[in-house]
Figure (cartoon, rainbow, N blue to C red):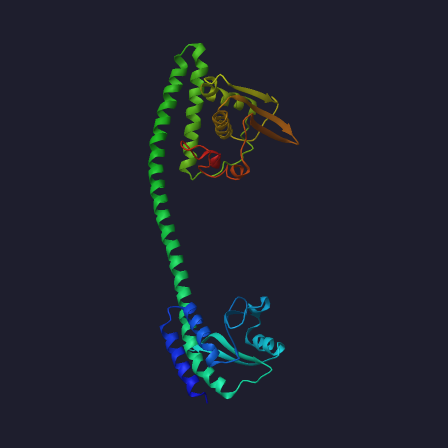
Length: 344
């Protein structure tokens, strides 16, 4: 039987474990009372870990690297202490009918007496309750975090849904405006003098491309399908793009737009889709050349494929920005950002 002093200390320890705020405080109380309750005895506490391993959550000894986790469950636990020349007692910590951990009392080269075993029997239920409480608190904290993430996702989805509804209404109104612009441009093209017909044709193509882009937006921004029945002339499309953007770069005397085109190149792509990509790239290049420079649009045939390039003499993009160029709103500009290459 435990001595009167040990029994008194055990009662004080049990009371301290009851009022401890969390497992960390429980460990502090164990460390304080253990030398008197379990003199010259090692006390370790393990909980179930990952993949049948046991993780140690308390020890009177400084942890050795190989002691922090033991693979193989309770049998491996007993084997480890035997191999380390300990006399040991492994006590499952059971709460609400479930094993939530293991308490190990061990002495090297000295057997554990009956008094130690009796104290262990009395201490184990309280340790099991505190471990179970700690594990429940951890699960509750994880559930709260998961709930918070779900609530944030719901708020984001609601905001996106509202934006989608507003965008659908705006796209419908813009489609009507583009239809009106197309009709008036077509009528104007028949009546304007010959020297203005090219400018009106540019306006007409821009309106057609705008309506085409709106149709893609209304259908979920699906990537354009490749059709072998639609053939684009990259040379002609590049010239269209230069005309569409001429007011932007021609007003800047320090920017020169050049071409390097293989006139024989043909590609299976909708001209409107190709113009959309090239206009985005060309406008980005114009913005990037704050101090002026050259922009070259090229098209060539290489290994049976058409390679189309837009190059400028600016400072280029950082590796980080290169990884983001196909993400919506990715830009170095502080404002005026659009979907850009993400829908091209």
